[in-house]
Length: 148
Image 1 (cartoon, rainbow, N blue to C red):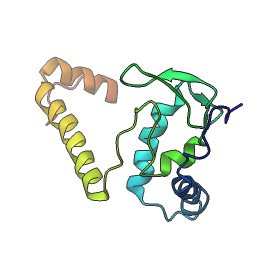
Image 2 (cartoon, rainbow, N blue to C red):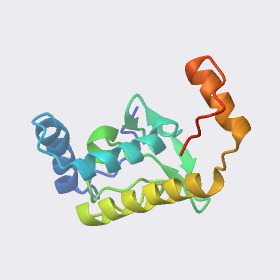
Image 3 (cartoon, helix red, strand yellow):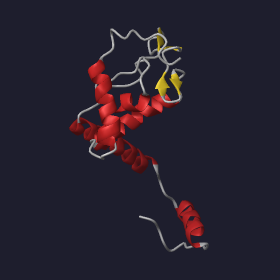
């Protein structure tokens, strides 16, 4: 039973209602901000293989270790609604706090720059590589052309 160990007196009902609002209204009407959707996808990636996940619910009848090695139980929440709510947290403490739109955009730029910079710095072309690429692309060797 998904809601086996829930203490209903300690639930944050406002956050639960907000999660369902985000899922049922804002997401379906396509009025939820893109940065929240992206961060919810990151949160979902943690939930997909979580031992507390039972058919898209954080099962309160199950136990697992949090990031500190403590045993915790699932919260009983529907995961998609919870993942979309910025102030929600994972019982296993696997999620980070959602970033503001500007902070999220800066983070994405930083990640992209990291991969772009590493790609350019670590990739060296030589004539053998260029010939191999030309063979793959054109089916023939072309020693006169070089990639820039």
